[in-house]
Image (cartoon, rainbow, N blue to C red):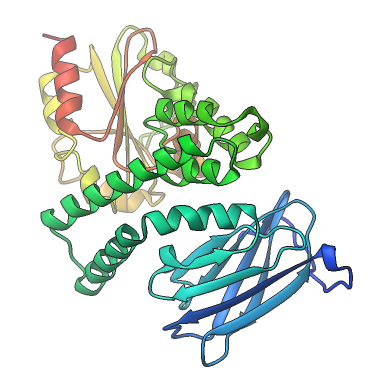
Length: 362
């Protein structure tokens, strides 16, 4: 994690207390720790607070604080904030941390029901987590990847998800299961699987904050999945023209979410140039939504393009607003909307998009 962005909703001043059950204590020992300073981000209902601790030469550290009301989790950042792991402190239950700093996924966290159950899962997938970390470290050093690495990584992730799913089904009453759903199965493009696994959980977990957050995000995602009515918008393109869904009445349109820095987002990769050349604007229109906010850079790029794209950039945050309304969390992403303003397709695949358009107008 190259950048550490401090987002403070409200700050809590953490202080020590003499009430034993009101304390939480974190002790740890990380081998191969190259930087002695660690940072802890405490997430609680209403905000995030930060603390800094120092490890000794053997990588040992300790911190004790008064338990913050509604504390949800604590994330420990280390190695100049490039690596991290999450713990779930519980009142009056000391947390013991031990592991190799090079393998954050394998670090053992003991103390409290959630930590212990997550540790149980980690022990089942230790070999896979190590293989995954070794591969990521190798790719980072080489600054490149290849097809074999991608295939191997996909297989590891598939096996991790399989074991996680089995763990969730065997432990439906555990909060750790909800955490695994959040880590392995929450995908805005596949919310049905997330819902299926949430339904496995005990009703006793319905008020657990992670379950509530997942359900809230799923409800929001449903507003822009295939079959949903396209959310309303009102934007102005780089030529000063205003567009709303009503601007595309009686025609199909594509919303193409992009950015200049995204190589995969180029019009050729998403086959938008080919689609545009084969279909008239009278029947199909393409509106590109870019996160870029510098009109000069955008116009410079467009000068070399034969198509005069209907492009909306992030002036006054309008692109960000569209990204949020349409639940776009990765690039590229294209949505095909029909004449009744119903979303027909969400895809990252240009060939899939072109095939869907060709089927409509064949």
